[in-house]
Length: 166
Image (tube, rainbow, N blue to C red):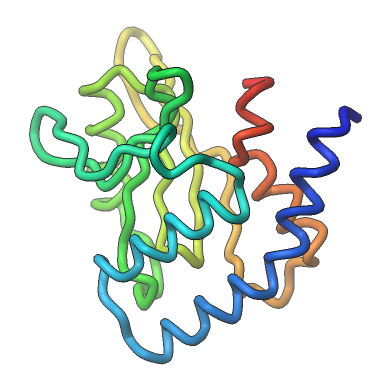
């Protein structure tokens, strides 16, 4: 495995408990969606290695609305990130549909739907020229049934380093 991949996983593993504690505190405080966005930016930058100013665009205008964030690399959009409140118990079909529509309208292949605690990843695929979002995986940071090493691996796939390999 490449050195940068090992370093990325070490970074994620080293900060996972701190971020999980932050999420639990904010759930307890019952924060809203706008404050949840701040946690998402923290996770994207501190855990996943993205640069806030080079790789993230907030409130990105897309036909039909505004995506919370667009994740980009070398000015190319990689993923739509749609944020819902950290207190939300379950992401719903309407949330997935909203993020999917943003990605399809913008020609972006990946969708990340998140509450900062739960991260759901979707890939836009075309079947008979009809686009849809296909579920790839999810990870819930506060889930005690998932080993930290598993969370680290799943989060790694969202890191800047992982996107180098596409």
